[in-house]
Length: 233
Image 1: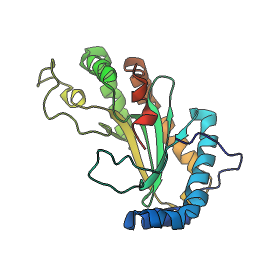
Image 2: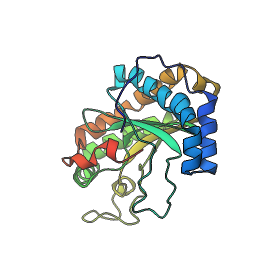
Image 3: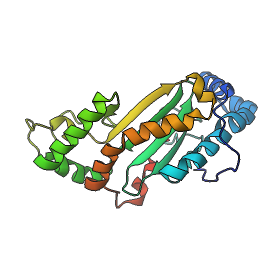
Image 4: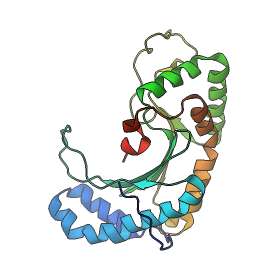
């Protein structure tokens, strides 16, 4: 992952960035990449580095994911990611995530996928009447405010996890393997301006109560390989 931050100001993502990713989606080859790499550098990577440098003032350091896919164990052998993502881990273990693609801007926060030790703590807290009902209230308030709260990056279990009854009042949460708030901003006019910073900050601040609960009851994984920056990009 790329961790260097430029001194240049963030001015927004130029339309050329979305056009680049639209082209990459249609022609995910080394030939396309090499012919258009300068567009990726100038229109996507450099603005993303500038963006996370600004966001770091409030949300802590971010890392930008590299553009290459790990195809060793995938049937899809396309060599390049169809988006450019950046992630920042909070001290308590939750993460802020943002990515740019042909569809525009997407942001998320929470736990995309929990490691085994995190999942054990999460389920214990959800099953607890006091902590579990507190989480339900937080989710209800976020959803009432128009935020989309979901199970993260993996499909929930189809049945109750081992050790928990199928008729548990919070079985939907117990079956999840992550918990995150996601917003698809798309490609509004402000995407090409510095206003991106304000929209991301407003979204992440609104989701802070969920992160507070997760940080308090789930925390960071003891396995360094399970850090957020290694699981999503």
